[in-house]
Length: 57
Image (cartoon, rainbow, N blue to C red):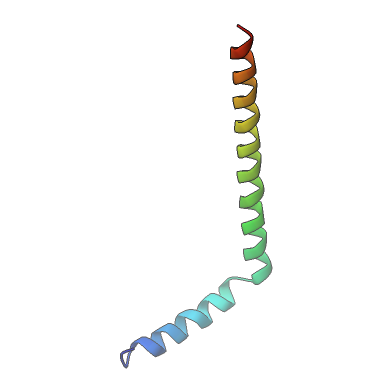
């Protein structure tokens, strides 16, 4: 690391620690995970219904 990178990195980490609370960050991650899971389930169910409907013809 150069002479100026360490203080800059320290200031950035301290700023991030004050602006982002850990609970909010974890909540956002889980919220994104829930919506991703819902979308995947809907797509899989739609694909299964499509294949079953196509197989009956």
